[in-house]
Amino acid sequence: MNISDTDVRLYVSTQKLPIMNRIRPVALPLLLLALLFAGACGDDAWNDLPSSVFDFVNRYYPSTEVESYNRDKTTGAQTVKIRNGATLVFDSNNQWTEINGNGATLPAMMLYDQLPGPLYNYLEEMEAVEGVYAIWRTSSGYTVRLLDSDVVYDYEKGITQNVTAP
Image (cartoon, rainbow, N blue to C red; front, side, top):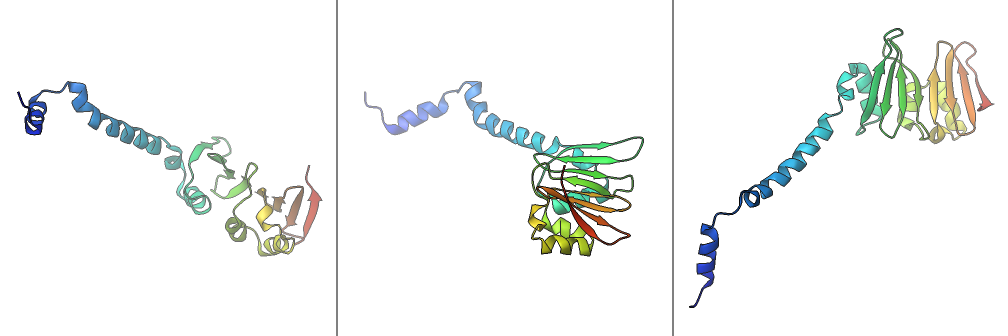
């Protein structure tokens, strides 16, 4: 008996494959797609952000994942934690009050946009723009945390001072 390739293909194509062999080629891609979709949509923190906070985070920390968002019911203060990144605190009016890089430097573009001109210029003169790790804003001014010192800017006095960080 002589069996040709055509006979073998015909025999294989007419055999009923077990259900798992028919499902497996479709199931794995569907499972991977479901896991990817769940990971992308599982982060409801982005959806919880007020629009101005969302715009701020998206502008200076694009392509990041918001790990958590919390709003203090008493003060209205809001904390945004970026996964493996900065922590941002906003007041009840959605204005930032604190940005801590948590060991990473802050984006230079954000410093340029958010700090008063004289303070930014002072940091530029010190060649410290790329070495800012945290900033705080209060009603009286700004504090900028560098690696080993803080720069304080006072609205009224219009001066900056460099003090050793604690």
